[in-house]
Image 1 (cartoon, rainbow, N blue to C red):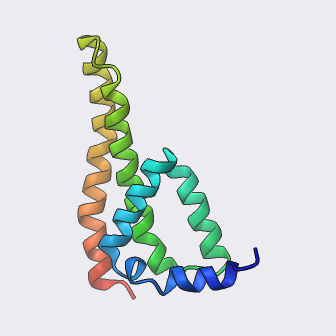
Image 2: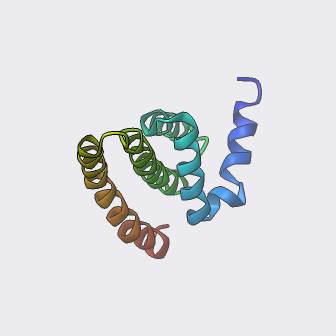
Length: 117
């Protein structure tokens, strides 16, 4: 709480957050560390509400969080590799969500970079 506003300015003015590709990678890594994209999404919404980061800078981080959840789905499905039938079903279920996330990131992120404010 003491350095919240100063920390927000550092985050918002960081070159890592200004670059959408690195911001998406940060979103992926943080999601993998937290093992929850919902937690990162909640934190980002709170940061936007508190004017610590702009919506424009938060969008790539949130897209990265979705990609991080796709990676986490694949890792979790690998834990079922002992039983081939169970693994086949687990990996298929994880892949359905992954295709959606990959399509969104590869179509919406370039549009955001090209036409975002």
